[in-house]
Length: 334
Image 1: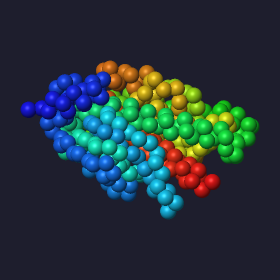
Image 2: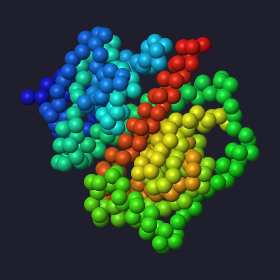
Image 3: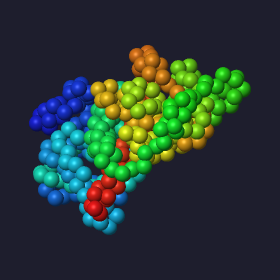
Image 4: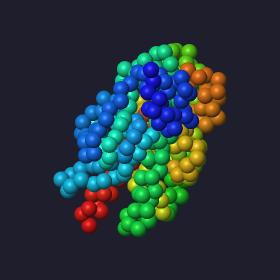
């Protein structure tokens, strides 16, 4: 029997994403864990064995500041996911999660996600949609905090001439057949396509554009609400927050990696992250219209592609959180 009280709690938080049957499946395949106030749920530097979903209570997110003490970053409540960055990227937790009150969490394990990927990929997609939307919300909150810091800080501004030149630098489509064949063959070998059928990769490539971009070429601009995605084949791309002609660098994205605009998962937000090449690069672009076409006409390709989109957003969340922690260190040392 499904616990009715837990079902109602999850239904309240996930009814926009999961059907009644999908919620029942989630409860029956995963365990509920309870934590007392002050108890560690996830520890900074340790690996998460699953994605935690708060059913009841509130959880403090904290981070150690390089020997300078511990900073409280935010408080999360029911309906919030925990540990998604550690679990999805298989990295140590960048922050600690501590029960602020009596807390109950349901833990979605690797075994459960593997089960969904094999037998119910649409349910995994629905869960990843909920996770991605929440990740975008967290990025937005920290983004706004960083913007406020940039407004009042004495950060170096970019030369106006350089900004104009960068805005005029555009990528060009690769049309040479031999060059296209070489780059696309390289792309097909990437591990991110290990679970794609050959026909699925070809269909994806039919809805993509192969681009060559010079250094300092902006691919996703500040203020550009466009649900496009890119895969780096050669070169490197830098993600940044740009405001008042100041740049806060987040991360460098290398080959065999997909990155995406916030609008791929959250069409309601007006904020954007800027992506600019930091060396000459070859990329595959999947434009918004083609993403929508794949979503509407090729469900199983879309589910696999959205896995990569979710991974890219979680990686972006991790980079934003690192910058947030650095800002807390600077505030602490003032």
